[in-house]
Length: 619
Image (cartoon, rainbow, N blue to C red):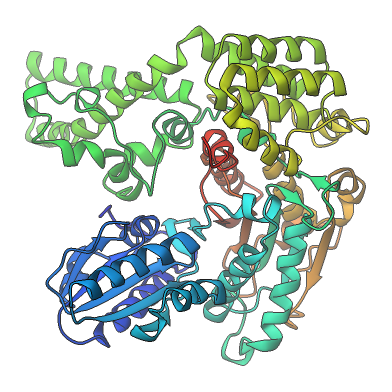
């Protein structure tokens, strides 16, 4: 299992949330006496690895297995399935139980659904005539801390399920997770929501407070002062023609922060990446021996931040600056070494030098990783892609963008790369001209195969790829929110646009305005963006700072009643990128904007991973 994140410096006590989830799982296992085999949904194993050590599970007499179509191989007489509520997994469980029955094996079976049981899944168990053999329960795991300021609701397909399938279960899940935070930290007095799904979550939160009220008498001032809910993507399942996106431009852009680039090219999963041993400087003959360390190297960087100060210093920087920082540190160490060999040093100076040497392994690790990333970023094709992304965002060269995408299709460039640009092009233009839409759709199927027809249909249903019916207001939004910043200084940034080298992510710009002064001063801008918006006061905390005032709003938000920094929870429905997280951290660190941010998200995404969720079943 991967390493558990270090949460010591979290502005909110996220360790409390993690320990609560640990206790709930351990209590489930303790109540099943004796040795047992814990069969885990493979998609859950990553989440559990961020919550609990394998050794703690083994102390409860647990054997660990992954659920698959293959029979469970175990000598245990008690089998516990820990699964998400998905139809396909029920089929696997039924097959495993029927296999045991055919062999005459006598076992006790428990199925614990995460986070809750569903009628549809239990119906499958009944149809397969195994329901009466199973003890059914729930493991209410609604969120997992990924970092000291990031919570994941672990909803990989929330966007597609809501947009394409019309399934709103994920919205209830998000609401329940936020309400669980309220039960620990108090009713959040201010809620701002933008987008259809976000407004619905705000409404569900109100109902949950009625059904399962937070006892405000036990708490003086709530620890979270404001909740900002933003839709990454929105659609209306009941009216197929009414398809909307608040900000699908940002995730389609290539991330240019250090951590963002690692995710773009190496794909971070539960805080870890897999890289070849040679990339990290491991000799071929030592590669097998060091495989485990190599596999989790970035995990170490992300979660042992106190031990890896260099990563904490560089992860949110533009990659161009990271290379400069590493070069300067390497040069400094080289100079120190030269001084050591040519001059007489005191004991104190020797001690300082040895301290610097202790940081050499982590610096070597970063240099190797940066060098590997540079093999991608130095390619002309990457520079061309960045130029085209900025051209699309500028929104004034339709024909040039169309021809560039057409050329990529004819060259059969990777489909995901093409679709990212095509989605960005479609969203910023409120769709493609009909003749261009039909032409590119036909060319895509001819170049990449007709098995992708479902993929294109999903993108159309989600409103990410469509025919132009109305004139785009992208240029107005771009100017009103100052989304394009000329001459961005990535080394000494004075704006969030440094994360994309000149483009300020729309989502974070909205957060910036929401925190400073609320929705009211930007009412006209919000109306230009798709979907409704709402602003709610709740909980009866009249002493909490009001964000409705136009004057002095930024001063009010800085402190709560006891002098602590105000805390804002920003929730992204549909996912957030590492670059956006970096931009939010930049905002929080600015003088005069003294508030802490906690980020909640259905999942961590990149343009690649987001496009992949829309791929059809035939691909």
